[in-house]
Length: 141
Figure 1 (cartoon, helix red, strand yellow):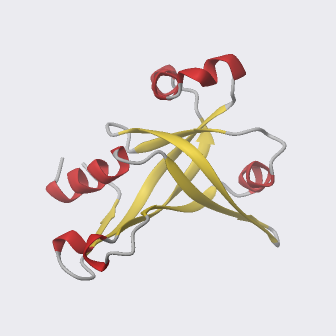
Figure 2: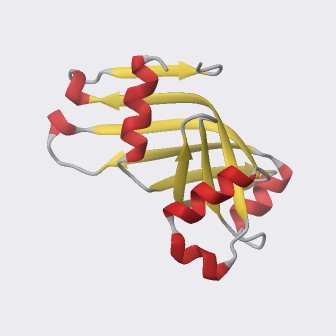
């Protein structure tokens, strides 16, 4: 794993909520989702119901964008991650196990799980220097 990808995965591992943007036809949607992250697959695993606007959009257009941010007013500590990818049903048992291990209370809800297969990252990390950007595109490994 490259050192830039390691920095991104480390940042992702310190958080658990993402903002996700979807679109289909003229319908737009933004939502917040709890996630687990699989560093081998470079994928997020999330839970969501079929009846939500964002899932209805995804069934028509699986291309998504999202972000994860560290909320701070200290300029030197600003960190944020933007990503793009494809939103798919999570059919891999290891991804399902990862999500339920991360959020064990979800077992009682029997959630429908989805995979977000990432193909682009852009991370801003002021810890590395003001406005420092790390940009990675698939394939990552």
